Image (cartoon, rainbow, N blue to C red; front, side, top):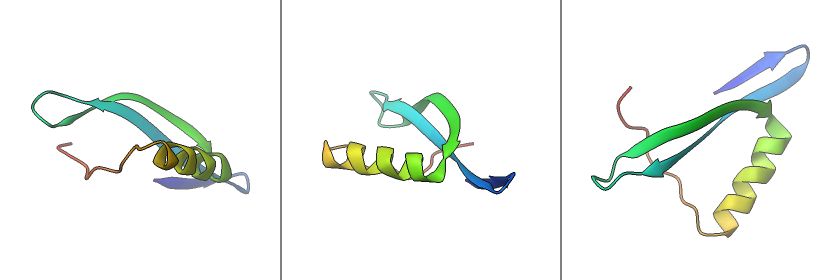
Length: 57
């Protein structure tokens, strides 16, 4: 999700962990600037993290 606030583009960054039943559990959510979120995503992907499809909600 992205939002434009006072000419800054903000992005929600969500972190979680995979439960034993295979469903990800949301542990943390924060708003950050888009460029910071992209840097974080690239760093995490280079260390072996992977994207998962959204579940429930």
